[in-house]
Image: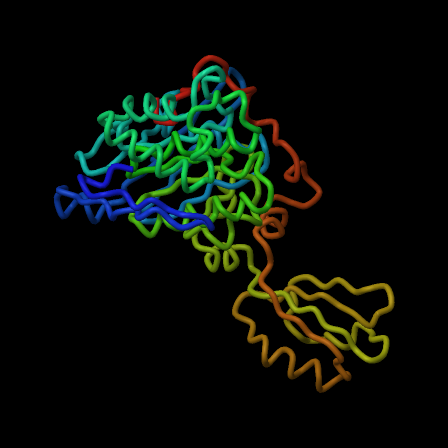
Amino acid sequence: MDTGGAAVRSPHAPFVPIALPPHATLESMTERDAAPVEVRSVRKRYGAITAVDGLSFQAGRGQVFALLGPNGAGKSTVVRMLCGIVAPDEGETVFRLGDGERRRADPGRVGYLPEDRGLYPDAQVLPMIRYLASLRGMDPAQAERSGRAWLDRFDLAERAGDRVDALSKGNQQKVQLIAALVHDPRLAILDEPFSGFDPVNQDLVLRLIGELRDAGTTVILSAHHMDLVQALADRVLLMHRGREVLGGTMDEVRAAAGVARRVRLRTDAPATDDLLAGLPTERVSWEEDRRGVTVDLPGGTSVGAWLHAVTARAEVTDVRSEAPSLRELYLRAVGAGSDAAGAAPSEPARETGTAPTSGGAS
């Protein structure tokens, strides 16, 4: 990784982080205070289909911003607009990545992990990484050091001279991720970064994203694995049919959905609806034996006071309080009976021949 002349820390197993240096900046105070990425009312149509419909958001410095939703929600079209692969029909994208304010980002300051992976199958791993890094502006010596450090981190140091097509699918995914990050970008755009990884490597990717954030990198994720993202993302934007349905921090999303906490409890004897009569509830689901009930509480409800009222009416033998998951909040926002759990017919089939293979913004 480019460390501005400093030696690169060579990580050792088990999984030791590379020292990701905070980005040294020379930009004005105004640029430092402004969001590195701003999307203003963008709209993209493909014929009669509106893939993205008036979307706006900002992603801050050292922030993980997650675009979430099912396949077809419009996430990848947003990613392509951010990377300059396609232009919005209306609205604009604004970048402030230390080189002034631009409508199109400098590819050397952006790392892009495409959903459709694009490596050269007959190329050797390290020479290919070195070549792709050079396209992002790294000199050969820097690219060599950075490439070897990243390969070592991902336990691929011994495969540096192998052909890409000799690697397993999971290891090819790691190499693609290395190609997106090898040049130490200020903005990392990761489209479905967990795709194809087993749970162990998904956890590795989660930790890596956290380290990028801590180093000051702006990370924009596009994913449909909401459970993997919700504990990591600083802000989320949930999309459906090209539009925002919920957005903000997790607390803001829960408040907007009208649900603060979920309580699951069991009583020593079957209960009736009188147990919850007069108490604030958003949604109630009884178990078949009527001894167990799950209750979504409205925002602003005191869990302690609510439980005190319940225990005054019945003998409670077990109780758990938890926050609703992003997936549940999303389904509630768009309607659980809709096609939200699957692909929404708003985003067209992926364009072919346009996605870059270099791991950087086109």
